[in-house]
Structures are given as structure tokens and as C-alpha cells.
Length: 296
Ligand code: OGA
Ligand code: MN
Image (cartoon, rainbow, N blue to C red; front, side, top):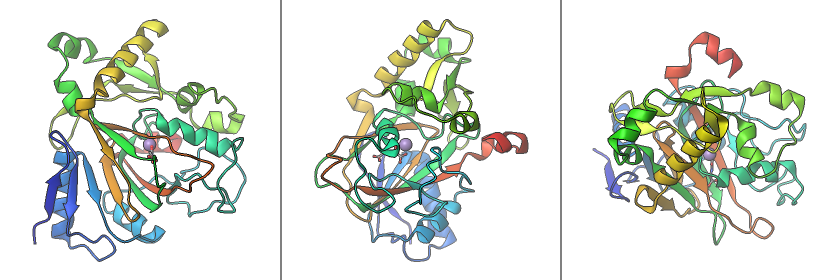
């Protein structure tokens, strides 16, 4: 049976109807989901909560997940298994984190527009974020269509940025909020990397802007000039016509293509509400040659 995808935005984002991810998926249905991501860039599924294993197993059908998902080396017990990233405001005792908690401060930077893992050599292909507990107000996730944003640029700008690279580093996005407390170990694991400002989608051939809060400057340009260009492009790409807001329900799973979208979390009351989200992150095979993998 073909899947039914309802468009949620004129340019991207589809809601997949009548697919229950807790049930086995045929290869045929999976292929249709894959094709729908290629066109829609963001897909929303509603359904029952998935276990960690179910979420990881679905994600792994798209390709291998990152082996090391923990950027902060806290030494504290993880709430969830190593295959998924904990995107909650909860600590190892399953209580809301307090203000001074490094993990809470680190996580605040998810509210800056970004694409996942642009600070790694092996960047992310897809992210699959799944809601276990949602905040009753706030805590939405917004997505920006970087293909539509690219298409809307004047030809002069397209020509100007065609061959430019930006430097991306996890410390860059955190410094924007004044978080600089990385240990030497954390810093050394994630040195800055360079990625083109424009990416061509390997399936659709569509070009997209590749930007993130992690991008600090343009390689070979004076830092302020490159930073200003990145700032201007980010501002362009996040205008309302390119943006969709997802309001979460428990059991939702949203998949997005990090090669052609940006996203950000919206604020909510971190002290009062629990928001428990878990992310599976699929590596981009185009960046996965053996040499690169070792350092990612
Ligand atoms: C992420 C992320 C945003 C959110 O999981 O990569 O940025 O709304 N999440 O939690
Ligand atoms: Mn993210």
C-alpha cells in the first residue's frame, strides 16, 4: 500500500499518515519513506512511543549511526543507551537539570539555528528525533528549507559562494552563549573542520545552503567579513517563508535531512516542565571514507 504524505508547508515537510513505526516495515514502504524524505526534507510521523532499540533499528535502515554520541564527557551515568543522543532537560536521576548543569547550558545552544554534526568531518545525513515527554507550552522545533533559501538567492550571490568553505566547530556555537568550559579532552576530540557553503543533494541534484551556528568564518577570508557573510546568509535562510514550526505530541518522530535543512529548538520553562526527546543520527556516507571516520 503506498504511503500517504500530507504536505505541511508549501516548500517542504510532509506528514506521513497510516505508518506505525512500532510495526515491522516492508522494504517497499521503507523505499517510499526514503523517497518522501528526498522530496520533503522533513517528515513527521505520529504514533506510539518507540523503545530505544526500535528507534535505533529504524534509523539504522538509513545507514550507520555515530558510535560516539557524547560530546561532553561528564563521567555521569547516561539516562539512555549509547546509540541515541539525549535531547532532554533531565539529569541522571531523571529530574530536571539545575541551571548550573553543564549539560543544560550546552543544550541551550540547540536553540540557535544549526544543522547536526556540521562540526564533524563526517557530517550527519539524517536525524530522527522522537518525543517521550513534551512541554505543555513552548519547546517546538523549527525547520528551515535550505534548498528553497538557496534557490531564492540572487545569481550574483550564488556565484560568489559557489566554491567557498566555512570552518565549523562545536565551540563556536557554544561560545555564542558564553559557554567556554570545554575540557582539553572535549576540545581535542572535535577540532574545527571545513565544509562547503553549498551542497548538492546526491539524489535530487538540488543545491542547498550548508550553514549552522557552528560555522565561524569563511576559509581564506578576513574573519569578520566571512562571519558577516554567514550571518547574512543565515538571516536570509530563516525568513518566515522558508520556516516550518513543529509542535510536538508524545510519540512523534521527525526525520530531517541535515544536508538541506537547518533546525532549532524553541524556548520552554526548563525548571518547571520535563521535555524528553531522543535523537538517532545517521552519518552521511559521502563523508565516510576510512581515514575521515577515525577522527570524526
Ligand atoms: C536536535 C535538536 C531541537 C529540539 O535534536 O538535534 O537540535 O527541538 N533538537 O530539541
Ligand atoms: Mn540539532
